[in-house]
Image: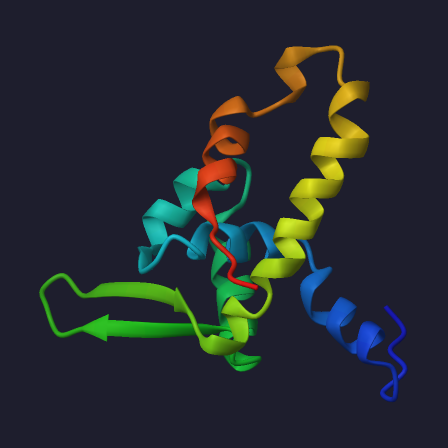
Length: 127
């Protein structure tokens, strides 16, 4: 994606439009999450892709990684303040989808009801 360094929309899109990024942020909004939990919630993501996306989000300061000195090692991921600032974006996408896209779905098999139902209660964004 071509990025105009003077355009904040372009710079933001460059980060959040990468595949899986917004879904990762959505899932991390629940709090500290382990790699295997993210892998389970994001059906279809490969472990390599998940690892690369998490690393890229760490590099951007959106995700923090905490390693615990245990055997076997335990690693948890959480949103930073910068990452939590993306939550209103996800809320806006949810509102848009509920208003403009939900009616067009005629095949219930196309909707992951578990994930979507959980989304309604998952994020709380203060104004």
